[in-house]
Picture (spheres, rainbow, N blue to C red):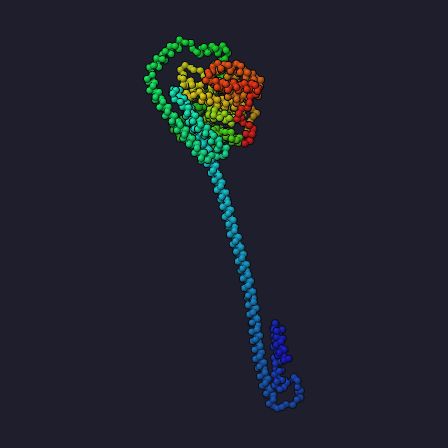
Length: 615
């Protein structure tokens, strides 16, 4: 094998280092020079020959130098060529490494960019999802706030509608009072207004039933308000029609009266002559009363108590004259209206729906009387807004309690107990309200004293009828049935108050007006001459409501009084009762006989049970 070929085979091994490359070049050049020398015909000096060999001549060394120079030039050329090739090889390798490194860097950059892009994409997706989630949370919060606002508005609208219903109910009841006194107008015997009275009572019952139904299920709807407003419009139309019919009848009667006036004057003169010749019936009945041991007038102590209460009521009215006479002062007039609504509206809202509602009403009234601010009709009201505000509220509150007796209790007997328990609780904390309540009660129902007003000289018949408790309007006295209905409601409310106490109050002290007053009332009633239709009605109402409590309190004494009523007092009532007035007496007798047989007075219907206060 040629040395050159050997060196080319070792090229791959030596090319990896600079020292190897230089060694390779030196060895190659040396071997190349030797090979060329052999081909030229001789060995170089010192190599393969004897130094004692003979010279062929002078030309031979010269030719050898030339060949040697040529060889050196060739070696240099080859060396330069090899160096250049090696440089190109190194450059090619560096280029290849650079390209590989560049490719690797590009791949890494591409992978990094892809990873960064993926990360940015994930971040963007995360931001997008977070944004969507925030939007959903914001929408949910806005939806909750909208629902809360809608619920608040619904409650406000419901409360406003409920207040509207109560105001409509109050107006309907007031309008109904205008109808009932004209029921069978006494000056117009040919006209019968019972249709108007019956329809008025039906409308009142319709409105009251609608309010109860809506209160049980929550707040009234707009349909309920529309129905009550239609009922109010119907009531107004009813009054208008009644007034037109009465006006037409009065005009017709006036024409008849003008024609018959002379005959009436003659008949009146004859009657006066006959009356002068006949003994007075009052004197005859008075002798009979004294003989039988019963009285017509109330006891002196009772009359003093009655007069003290009336004087206190008049003093209370005088104490708030500044509020009463405020026609020219709009600010005081506004305060007066707000205070009156704050005092009367809660009383109108008393019902048997729930004990918690009754407690809210009591707290509202008590806070008002205690000088605290309360909200009424969307306005803040306090008795401290005017120096006479507290006296005014005392008076109006007591008056409203009594009005509820002759209106609400008269129509719904079981309403007496929730009204009475609130009135009793207020009475216990604010005694002046109780005194004014009694003053109003005695004025509207003198039989609650008991007291039978006497006809005094100079007193007109209309005024005397009012003193007896009748409602008189335009010289027209209310019908007996309506009168008894009102008296019944007032006595039932009074009988409920004397036996009930506010369950959340201080029960250590005595009742401000307890059962002892009821016992005294019953005893004084039995010591007075009975009145036809009135006495039996009031005794029955009183015993139905308060009889059970009196039986438990007085026991044997109570049953003795019941026997006295049956054996002695009922015959007196029968003696003065006509056949057309026996209804109330028969009901009283049946109640009395049943109680005496069973030796038990039943609990009153509608009494408040302990479970009521947990509702």
